Image 1 (cartoon, protein in one colour):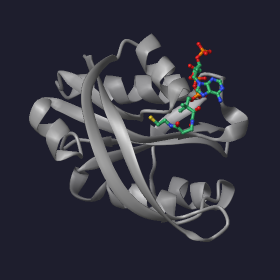
Image 2 (image 1 turned 30 degrees about the horizontal axis):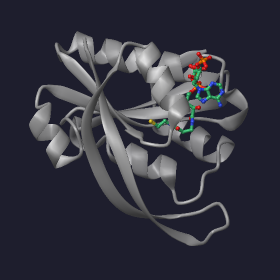
Image 3 (image 1 turned 60 degrees about the vertical axis):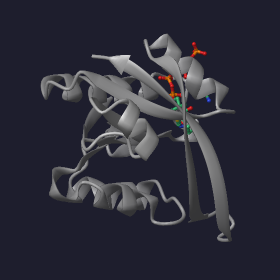
Length: 162
Ligand SMILES: CC(C)(COP(=O)(O)OP(=O)(O)OC[C@H]1O[C@@H](n2cnc3c(N)ncnc32)[C@H](O)[C@@H]1OP(=O)(O)O)[C@@H](O)C(=O)NCCC(=O)NCCS
């Protein structure tokens, strides 16, 4: 498995080989403008397995950013259904942590939906700790059936010292 920064060629491959509704790959990649974020993807040859985004300007939620001003956030972690349980998520998280460490960042944060027990278990296993800080976000997206969805999500911030 190879985890690397998504460049323009990778972005085309992601869009073609891992179609997701709502221009998800494009919107993640757009966040990298002006070096504000790093868009990471895991590959097996030309096959994308998963992706995630490091937000260098810190936690996206204002409350979380105030509480953990020293942290970067790793968000949008998503492993393809057929590729789960094989270490892809662990590898993406590990690469994000190493990149942050190399920049001298002392802390990395993730937001986990309160009902996402699997992801929470994974982060706790990797040394993250629950903080009780909840980031509430409201957003619109297009569902698998092409219908618009309005979502209200409560994510608890988990952090790890690097
Ligand atoms: C959560 C997620 C990123 C984990 O990625 P992954 O590549 O399956 O994880 P890994 O193989 O590295 O690690 C396996 C661990 O992840 C967790 N896990 C989460 N979903 C899993 C799944 N469908 N199958 C197996 N393990 C899963 C388990 O804790 C497992 O640990 P265990 O074997 O001790 O039970 C992935 O399941 C996913 O994309 N889920 C949907 C989107 C999501 O929830 N993103 C996280 C937002 S915070």
